[in-house]
Length: 340
Image: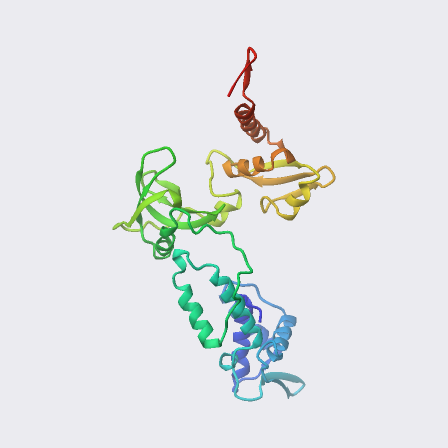
């Protein structure tokens, strides 16, 4: 059974209509009822064809083998269950069993992470209730770092974001003294196998980005939570790679030229959602992003397989990075003496 939220809303509403023995629901009525529920959930409406497809699925062995029958009423036909039936009361289907086994396998990979202490109990209940096992040996590899410093704070911070609980943290930036900050937590973001907390920092009256692996201590702050009225994080991350934004910078049209060997990789795994192919023959792609340190790191990772064509400011920044790297590895010759 499709496991997306939109499909479940449709099936539940159809089930309700088919169970109603006091009203006659024609196909147009069913579509109207389903779309009302979708609209309430902020989802797009569906067509009559989708309703027919849903009915077909509900009647199939992959669905619930629902006893849906059509009954003549004048020149039209309405649909209803032919007996006392509901998809909410039917035994679990074989397809659902397969999906639960896949879920168990996936969830098992998360054990050991602090925020998932409840996983083992959940998996035990699923196995007992439905006689499931999952897969005994690992066959899926997730990119995760269970030994990451600061990961122990993740579970509590998730709760603080949800419950709007301010926190006081001891934050230790690289190469600086420990800072004590009060943060109103708004959002958690994972990037490059690290976790970051974004929240209002009253000391600067602005958003702070806190790497969890730089937190040395944390406690709840007994102050009133300041709600997020200024930051749209979907928009915030739409125009960048990673998590950092330099406020003086704006979205720029970045043009990159890749080697013929690297281009297929970049096409199959875009650097950013705005990526467009300008000329596949010449290996040129473009991005509309705010240049930041994560973009620069990404470009340097490509080494000599990429050339920044524009903007000039980004090209110069990359050039300076390459020059410093050259000095580290090759040194500067003065009077036939090499220093590094």
